[in-house]
Structure formats: C-alpha cells, structure tokens
Image 1 (tube, one colour):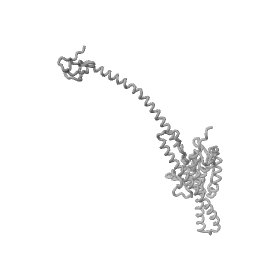
Image 2: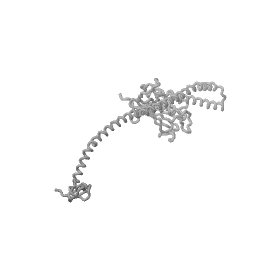
Image 3: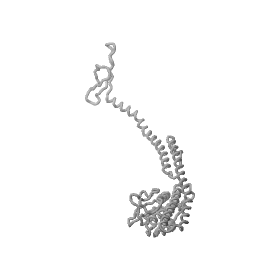
Image 4: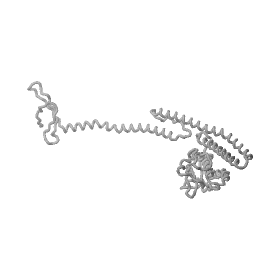
Length: 359
C-alpha cells in the first residue's frame, strides 16, 4: 500500500517515496472544492511506468514509418534509375555523333521533363550541320573553280619556257613556276580535305574493302617516284609481314601518300626515305623514315593542324598533308605517331594499323 500525503499545491508535481528506481511518482492534485467538507482527489502515476509506456507508444507508432522508409527509398531509386537510364541513352546518342554530320536525337526515350532541352539541342545540331555543309560546299566550289584557271596558267608558263632568256630571267621564271605548282598542289589538297570532311553516308564510293597494305604501299611508292627522282632521293620499301585493313582504299592511299610525300619533300637532295611494314609489340605498323631535319619538340604537337608549317622549313608545302593524313587515319581506326629519329637526323612517321576483325 503506497501512502503519499496530499500535496499542498494543486496541479502536477513530482514525488519520490524512496531510493529504489520505482520510487519516483508523477502526482496530480485537484483544486480544493467550494465546501470545506468536500473531499480532494489526488492521482499518482509511476515515472518508470510512464517511460515504458511512452517508449512502447513511440515504437508502435514509429514502426510503420521504419518499415515504409526502405520501400519509399526503393521506389525513389527505381524512378531515379529509370530517368537516369534515359539520360544515359541520350548521352550515348550524343557521344556517338559523327562530328562531320551530326544527326538529330530521338525523343522516343526522352523524359518529358527534358524533352524541350533535347528539342532545342536538335535545332542546334541542325544549324551546325547546315554550317558544315555550307563550309564544305564553299571549299569544294572554290577548289573546283580554281583548278581550271591554275591549270591554264601552268600551261601558259610551260609554253613560255622556250622564250625565256638565260640568266636572271630564267631564275625568276623557275620561281614563278614553282609558285604555280605549289598553288595547284594546295588546291588539290583543299579539294581532298573537303571530300574527307563530308559525311560518310553521302559517298557511295567510300565503301570499305579488303586492302592489302603491302600492295597499297608498293603502289604508293611507285606513284611518288617522279618526285623522288626529281629530288634524287633514294626510296626503299621493306615488307616484312602481311597486313590487311578493311577500309576504302582511296582513303588509305591518302594516308600513306601524304606521309611519303612529306618525307620526300623534307629529305635533303640525295637523301634516303625508307618505308617499312613490320610488327611492333605484336601489332602491325608502317614506318616512313627520312633523314631530313626532323621537327622541333615544341612544334611536333602542332604539325597536324591545318595550314601549320614548321618555322624555318625550307621545303614547299601547303601545311595540309599531315592534317589530311590524320583525318583519314582516325576515320578508319589508324593512328599516326610522329617522333624524331634517335639513330640519326630525320623523322619517323609511324602508322599503327587496326587489328583485323575476329573471324
């Protein structure tokens, strides 16, 4: 039997009836009545019981929230994953675009929230595609229009040769003829570059074919022997392996013709140019080596830029040959590496051929 005296102050109060844990009580004492003989009411509740009851209520009421929270997180993860999957698909479509002919992105898998953004991006791609087409048409039209008058000028210069007196006039005439020849070469290079920049699907003649690299290299060397003979450059070819690449033969010829032509132009008169087809670390490569001046280290990363020529270079050129070679190489999985030779003066242009497709 618990005996707690009536508390003098009405309302809530705390009472401790002993030193053990269950001796703390919460007491509520009612207000005194209007009559003196009216009994007063006092209610007690054990503090330990109150804590246990509050804990039990908290657990019972928090249990549904605890059970629903993982389910809510799972539903949220599914929704976010589905949305991000659509975004990743759009990102893959963007990454797979051909920079020469960007195409519009499909709106079929795009969430409604970002559909306006993708639509605006498609409009931008359309304008970029139109700008590229305009640029290509301009270069092609300009190159085509210039070919005829430049050919006529070259023919007139050739006809004038017999009427040029010896001495200083002949030297000036030779300089004029060399300038016209360089201009004709530049026009051909510009026309070739504009064709390379055109979309792949727009050229039926660019279908891939099985190309024997050794046969192609021998043909390329033989076609450039006229330039080699004019500069008295000794050209050698060594084919140590059989290599096949599946690509348009014309574009592969463009790669090797420009590299060999570049080596012949920069090799000194009476110099040597070697073309080698062999293996390096189990992969087929083509090396084009010359004994010219090489390329300064600070310029070797820029020589693939269009119209860039190494400062102080004595050989004539348009600055487009290496750019054309790299464009054609990258388009078909080849990689061109330039480095100065360590066994003497000169440059080595190495073309890493793609691995043959699995059978």
